[in-house]
Image (cartoon, rainbow, N blue to C red; front, side):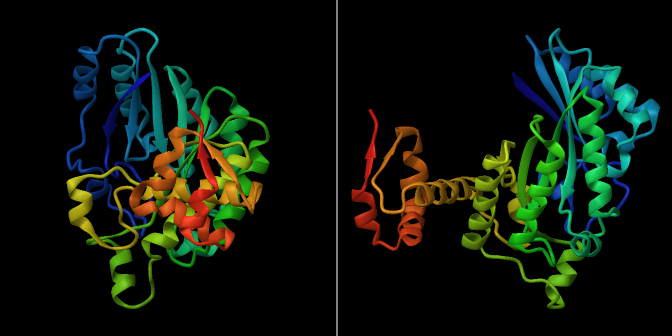
Length: 313
């Protein structure tokens, strides 16, 4: 099903996160009105997933939520709605409101479950509170939950983010859950820029960030998450607004390539490996990043490693 996104940048977020500027990230400075949403779906042929991103949707006042949801629900039959929101605005009452409309997926901005990380980022909740909200959403049973996690946050470590995945997976069990992984970037005008300039924050580089996200992908796959996206959508405003951090338009591909290299090195440390042609870009693209990482993980030269790879027809 095609997606029709509407961005509500930083609307009704209960806290200003240290790293966040949704207008720069999304490239959308104006907030569409419910009437704009209704106009946007009016010309659509066939079912579509109407998405509300960039703000904390369920933090809106009830009447405004209903206006947006009613507009989205005017899309052709069989359409559905996806929202993104802050964990603090997940309550039984708010979920019941959403259930009156064809809302199928509710994504929570989790970022981290590590309390020191959450505090320095001004997220406004504890890790245990976030897990409670995830559990509430799962137990409600009327929506598919999604979690949006981050790498490279202040005071965050790779091991803590992998532990976060395990904690969420323990709550998830065998139930369906979607996952997005975003790198932390330093954007102009954010509190994180001040932390960078004062020497209180140093972001990981692109290679380390790709490996970090790649380990999260590898771990998420083993824990049964449905991976939707790794890395931020490239926009002109994002490229112009980044001060520092692992900014790369193909960071998601680099991370997936490292995740593949991890999987191959673990399953058959000495090779050989037989891969699908669909995996060729992960191995040989971006300066042969995936091949070089596989060689590094298995203790070989790149040309020796390549000779151990064969491709199915």
